[in-house]
View 1 (cartoon, rainbow, N blue to C red):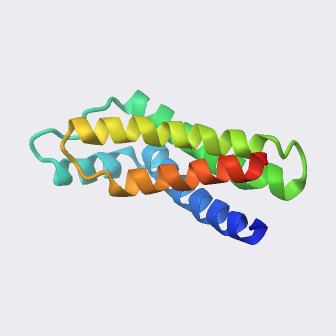
View 2: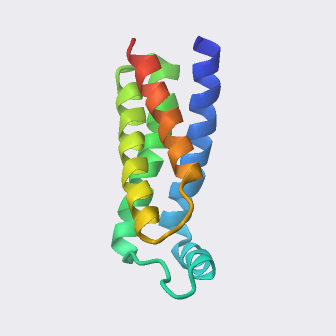
Length: 121
């Protein structure tokens, strides 16, 4: 089970670091992608809100791996996973209101929640 958790943590960390980095450091490209996906609605979020989400995803991605890997405050890992699960709940609400697919968002929620439970036991 430990190896499986590490694999899921690594994949989630990579995904959230990439997604958060894009939101924080490549906002214009991220906005263009959102506008292509929903031309009539655009992104629907301000740059500052998008930056906050990006920072949260970056912090969560780092928190999924670093505390557990270094043995320094490993209790932070399940908290980071739980925080990312909350972000995915909010993302699902956002996508639902826009009529967009939510399968990936729900999948990421399930994986983050599984890490939160698996690392807190």
